[in-house]
Amino acid sequence: MNAAPLVSVITVCFNAADTIRRTVVSVAQQTYAPVEYIVVDGGSTDGTLDIVRQYAPPKTRVISGPDCGISDAFNKGVAAAKGEYIQFINADDALAPDKVERSVELFRKRPDAGFVFGDVLKEHPDGTVERVAGDPHYRRRLRYVMTRVNHPTMMVPRSLFGEVGGFDTVWKVAMDYDWLLRLEARSIHGVYSPEIIVIMGAGGVSDAQRFKAFRECRDISIRHGLAPLSAYAYQGARIMKHLVLRSFGRRT
Image (cartoon, rainbow, N blue to C red; front, side, top):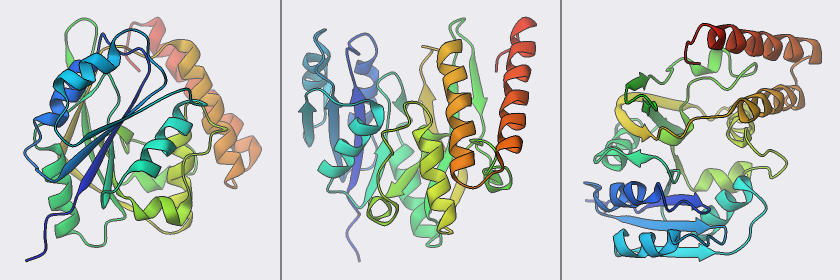
């Protein structure tokens, strides 16, 4: 019988003392054993690393120092990873206890999977929790928009980074969209399962961040071959939808 593959779980953080404890604990409590944990810290000064060291599982490595943004930090984590598979988890999110186990099992059942992804349980400041289902048909609109692949739920073979490269540091918010389009260009497709779960914290996304994501998605889609007029029209429609829903107090 083949040994269970090692999974590298990567968290990038900076001054995340208020939220990182549950992230680290969720990694330590995984039902799947062959896990290494890599924390890429941007030079925190608020005690973040003290919390990491207190709650982290035994196989934990910390990389601390200045970086050039989230994409650069992700790439540092991948470069340090030794696992067959990569799982990112943000410093205000948490893995469901069986998240890694379910993902590895799906790879075993579906050898055709380029990557696997699932659902997000999105916490809101008012205490409610919204289930955001992944889209098994995400490819239909991928050239126009970052569809519901739910990036925090993705597990990917480390070998893909050698094949398509790391995250482009030009992009500060939508680097995952660019990376997915590079996978799509090589006919590398994801497989969805609702049993793969990640819990997203209630920190929220500011309008400034959201609009920056819209702009980056527009520019990324153009870079990957979408006609500029179509890209501007599609992202403009998304912005209008967001503003209308927000005016009625709806979540977007």
